[in-house]
Length: 230
Image (cartoon, rainbow, N blue to C red; front, side, top):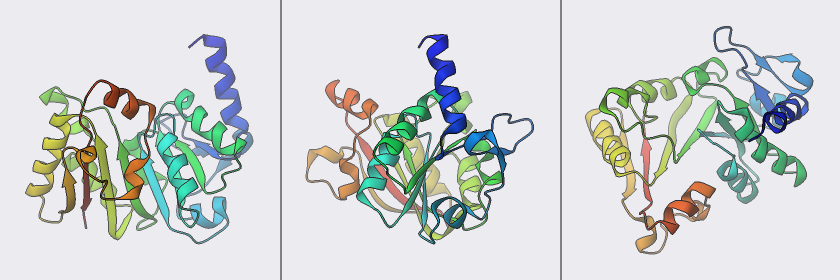
């Protein structure tokens, strides 16, 4: 991506009505439309979406394709795609504005700081779609299903809130199964190491990101876990 194109995307994000940014993780705070400071913690449903519908996060959302697809399919749920890369978020945010999809927004922040911007039990559901698997053992704590992150999600997820992992990576899949087995607060509701080998168990699994399409073209198997953490 050229520097000018990237700068243009950041300029767009500053003015987009569906994007919020935590630009400086050392001094966390949100800016919203027109780059104005905002406080959204505990107020996402009413403050942005102007309703009281449940909130679902897509963590490490990348280009936001999954969040947008889920929002189109479920008008009664508010979706927020979360990623640290603004140039990636731009794609989904632009598409949502173009198609006038009102029940999806985007938050640019490090996932490690997501609890700073959502109140206790404010989130009803979490999707983690094709995250970086951090294959080196020394980096395992960075995996988004590590014990470290499960503790973080508990701070914002409502009791009984479901977490989904969709991945092509066998190491991350097996690591997640093991991590959940070791945590007495967790319960796996469903797991499948090859979701397309038979009829899909859940219709929301039919949505595909660009990465998933590429993985399928390479012959990789797509894996999925649906679980509770509290």
